[in-house]
Length: 509
Image (cartoon, rainbow, N blue to C red; front, side):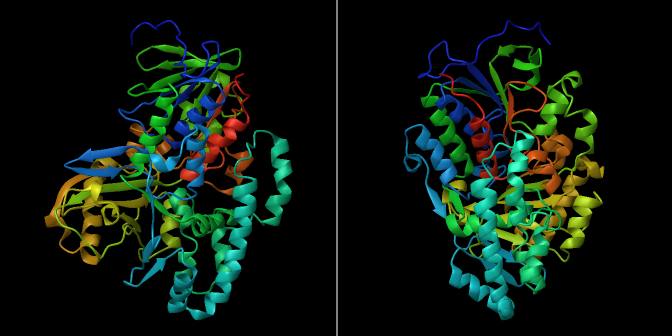
C-alpha cells in the first residue's frame, strides 16, 4: 500500500456552493444511490464510492455473449418510492424508465407439477384459490384485511421512521401491539387458510428478502398488500436500467459515482466519522459518511473495534443472519414460451428445508428454486430467438461450512437436471452462456458478512430499533442505508432506509 494521500473533499454537485458540507456514500446499490440523491437535494456536496467496476452493488449487471443478466433484484414493487427520487430532482421517471406490469405476478409450481398463478386481479386470485380449496376463500378475505392493516401500520406509518432512539421504539409499541407483531407470518396464514399448498402461496414472500416465514413477524404480510395495491413490475432493459437512471440523475446534479474504489476504513476522530480511506491508501475527507455496504461488514471490517461500544465483535458474531443464495445465470439458443417471467419452483419439503437452511445451517440435497426468465417480457436481454434465465436456490450462509469452490459445479448440475426433468426439457444441449454466483461470492465480491445475502435475519428482535440504526449508535456523522439496516431488505426496504436516513440529517443550508 502506498503512502496515504492528503485528505480531499468529496465532489461538489453543480447546484451546491463550494462551502456546502460534504458527504461520502460507500456503495452504489439502490440504497446508496437513493441516499446520494436525497443528500444532494438537501444541499450536500456528495461523492459515491463503489468497490465494483460498475454501479449497482447487489443490483449490478452481468453482460456476456449477447445476454444481459441482472445479478440481484428482479422484482419492482411500490414504484412510487423510485418515482419520488426523480420528483426530488425535478424530473419524471417515465422519461427515463419504462416499468412493465407483470400478470400474473408469479407462478408457484409445486413438486407434484400443479401450480398457482399469483395475480393482481382479485377475480383471478379467487378462481385460483377455489381450484385448490373453495373453503379457503373466506379465510383469504380475512388474511387480506390483516395484510392491509400491516401495510398501513408497518409500511406507511413505521417504514420510514428512523428508529434511532429508544423513544422511537416506545412510540411504535402501540402500533406493534395492534398488529400482534409477535405472531409469525406462517402462523397468521395458517390461522386463516387450511390448504397446505395455499399456506405456502401466502407465506413464501419473506424468502424474497431473506426471511423465514416460520420466524418473521406477521408484519411481513404487508408485502401481499404492496403487490395488490401497486403491482409487480419489470424495468425494461433490466434492473440495471434503474441503476443507470439513478446514476444519470446524480450526474445531472454533478455528483460523481467513482467505481473501482473500495473503502477499507472509515476514518474516525474524537468519536465522529471524518472521511474514508481507500484500498490504495487514498484518503477522502467528509462531514458525513453514509455506508450502503453490508451493516455487519461495515462495523466489523471498516471501523476499528476501539470505536465500537455497541456493535462489538461479539455482538456482530452472535447475531442471526439471513440465508445466502446460489445463482446460476444462463442463456439458451432457443426459447421456452410456456415458461413465465417469474416462477417459484417448490421442492418436496417446505418447513423442513427452511429448518435446514436457517436453523441447522445444513446444505440439503433437495431445493426450492426461483426461475427468472426476463426474455419472456423483454427481448432486449437476449439475442434474437434466445432466452435469458437465472435460477436461484436459497442456501445457508457460510456458517454451514460448505466449500463452494468444490461444491458449486455439482450443485449447478443438480439444478440443471431438475430443470430438465420439469420445465426446461433438453436444457443442457441449448445452454450457450453460463456463470454462477455462490455464498462465497457474496462475501468476497460484495463484502457481505458470512456471505448472507440480506444481512441480519429479519426476526422481530432484529428489526426496527433492534436492527443496526440508520444513524450509527457508535459513531457520530456515520449513517447506514441498505438491506442490513432499518427497515430491511428488498428494493422498497432499501429505498425507505435512505428516506429514513435523510430524515435524520439536517439540511446543508
